[in-house]
Image (cartoon, rainbow over all chains, first blue to last red):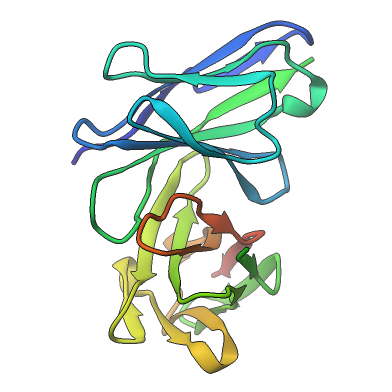
Amino acid sequence: EPEVTQTPSHQVTQMGQEVILRCVPISNHLYFYWYRQILGQKVEFLVSFYNNEISEKSEIFDDQFSVERPDGSNFTLKIRSTKLEDSAMYFCASRGTGGTGELFFGEGSRLTVL
Amino acid sequence: AQSVTQLGSHVSVSEGALVLLRCNYSSSVPPYLFWYVQYPNQGLQLLLKYTTGATLVKGINGFEAEFKKSETSFHLTKPSAHMSDAAEYFCAVTVGSAGNMLTFGGGTRLMVKP
């Protein structure tokens, strides 16, 4: 069964460092998403991406964040200068065309900022 | 804007007992509703969804949920809990057919006692 894969599963970084989280969405999907879940809190929407551009983003997704689809298979989330409060589980998701909005999620990348 | 409230961050049931996880939503337009499950150290997996049509929807692992517009609810039930059902359950809502932004509830951790 096709699945969304994310790397790394866990990354520890120092405050102020740049981090890139990688995702390989399901191959025929065209809509891509990043969500995050701070420990003990709800899953929050960060950004959606379609046709090589951001289609929607939340207040959380400020100038420190960026997304890219560099090669037609990977979908990356970059945090330019990490802060302590960026520590969270980051989930990538993808969706095909049509259907009823079902998102397929990866297993998440846990980011710890020290 | 839509929102989701899950009553009870933790629910504990005995094996074989009824499982009832509550979800209420707020939406100004007809919603699409989802339940996702998250097993330890895994991603979010779709349990079931309501889009249009029959208000009682059946999902995987014996779970079902009923969309009640008058109560703005989408509670998740299972007649008989199994130890393997222990996980975190998230209710989510989106509006329109795009499903661009899923809004999640805070999650309910289900514990199953032997």
